[in-house]
Image 1 (cartoon, rainbow, N blue to C red):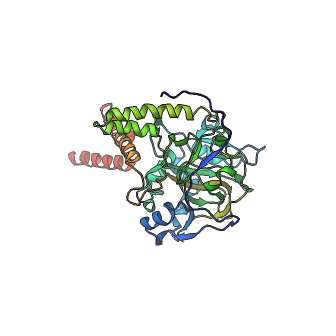
Image 2 (image 1 turned 30 degrees about the horizontal axis):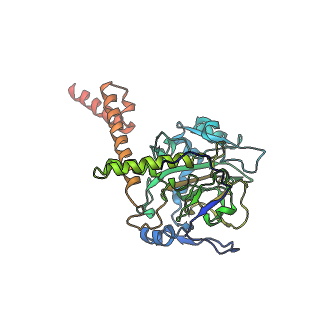
Image 3 (image 1 turned 30 degrees about the vertical axis):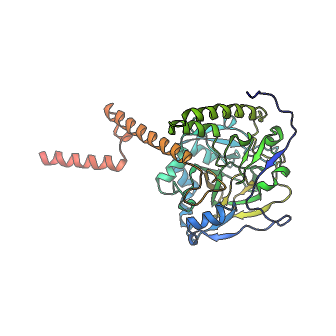
Length: 408
């Protein structure tokens, strides 16, 4: 029987299947702290990622942090364009709830010079997208730090987890600014470089007690076994992939079952349309809680430079950011990974290779695009500085001058 698109009249509710770690009721304990250099990727997966257990990692190797001064940031990536948020002086939750269309565009150097006086904050950046999501891992200014060797492009400790995005969070605050209470859709590895961050954290177990703008307006809210919150029900898998996208991928992979998969795809698309009817339509992201700050049962944890927080997908958190005695700004970098399925293993965190093949395909196309662009630049005889590094140009000039002297 064909399904009909009828508007749901169900009241607010959450179907919570979460089976992961949760602090005991009433126990506002501190998180575990471990030395990042004393645990293997497999041990980290089995103890923390698999169990959905937040943890703070520490390291004695913090010398690299001194390279992230404002002057150094400006020198390395000052000419890159960024979008920044302006603080809301009327709200305790100054940042985080505006979308990129309402933010200011400027050079990174201009932001660094104005962030204190104008109360600006540089956070997630808009990235090029296709119909499945972002087509790049990070933004140009962060890529500069990666190219310089200041940041890794992958975290070995995360083993076989698939990277989604790398972001930086830079601002200036003496009194502390709040992100508001919200959740993310990816496993978060958060590295504090300067300043101080206070996290207030609550488990997805408390989703019914922490209503968000998304769950208030959508009766199909689902909390998966691994904690991932979906506002369109089972249309999204535990790893964040839309089932319709996965079925399209399988149709291309499996000629023998193509017709059956196409029938499943049609049914899934109809389910998606029905589930999305009640999604929030205002500018506030659905992942933000209606209460602007943490309340009820939560853990408080303070990060200082060199500390790293692993936070599983959809753990609620509020982040309060400060400068400290050693720095006149605060800066953090985070790595988002697709969450593993609840039955996943260290070797195979996901039920299939959907995310792996998507990003491998994007990487191959990007490499080919850059190769084509470089060939076009050579054919059009553009200035040398667009094709070669300063060292390569200087070496060429010296060799040319030496040849001229030899010919006389």
